[in-house]
Amino acid sequence: MTIQLSVLIWTVITFCLFIVVINRLLFKPMLVFMDKRQARIDQAKQKKIEYDRMLADAEQKLENFCAEESRHCAQLAKDELDRAHGDAEKILGEAMHLRMQNISERRAELGIEHHEIEEILDARVEELAAAYISTLVS
Image 1 (cartoon, rainbow, N blue to C red):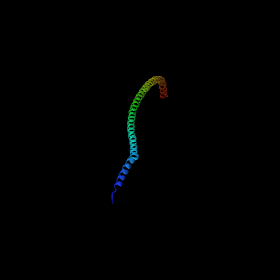
Image 2: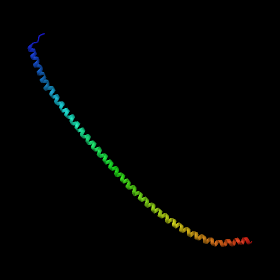
Image 3: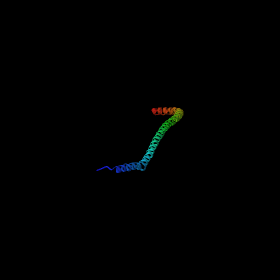
Image 4: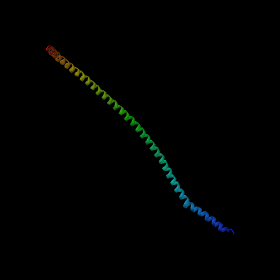
């Protein structure tokens, strides 16, 4: 086997032309496509990072809002409980006052009834004593 110089030169020229054509038609467009794709991937990653940060900020704001609302509701509940306690004490005081009035009225009525009963008994004691004496004598 002999190496022919003309075949070797044409093989080298053909190979170089093939590399140039492949480079222009395949590699460069593929590299451009891959660069654009990588740029879109990088952009999507940046957006994801930005959205993650926005989500974390929103979650923090929500947490702060919930904590503030919880404190506000607790304060409202405490205020309402204090008001209800005050109202209950007022009602209890009024009830105690009415009870004391009622007791005083009942004591006065009982005193009058007691006095009336004593008068009736005083009048009846004399009759009973006379009836007893008459039963003893007879």
